[in-house]
Image (cartoon, rainbow, N blue to C red; front, side, top):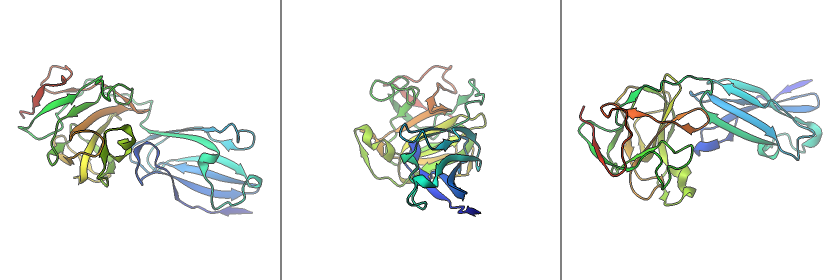
Length: 269
């Protein structure tokens, strides 16, 4: 007899430190329990699963999937009932290594797109850290980030049109070490070519958009703040493709050159 539990519960907050997370459905069939993972996000998600060495001999996994919004990786984890003392409390991390990242690795990005500066017309800000910055822009996920010296309370705008797929605005915390990285308030926007813009270190309750909103270029989307891994107020702006890899990008009016650390840049239009 098949017993369908069909229970949706929070599974992982993975890399973004929010209550929004991958979900799962659980059901029992014969002598095993089956867990399927669901992507609740607007952005596509790549999921990879590998058994732990200690569980490899007896669990089953559906090890890989690229899931669009609402898609399910069916039977991602199969555990014999004989290995469980309580089927209502299953900690997946006790059985598998789980990795989930936003984006479709098979997508083709528009490398020629030119972006707008992510702040209001007439504003002028200093570049605190640019591409390959020695302080914190020295890893694949941050190599092509730019830190604009925006004071707390200034308006952040969309550098490109797209759709909001993630918002965090509940933090008031910051510190000078990476232990606060998950505390940064942010708005994430996916574009029509699958690239994803991250606007980070926003103020507490500083998001001006909600998940699912379609935003146009230059639309106000947030209020600058000082949350997360930072020593001064600023906007951390970075562009990603799949697998959390930052990619280079360029702004209109600057001849496809990177913005230089220490220089001021004004948005004239």
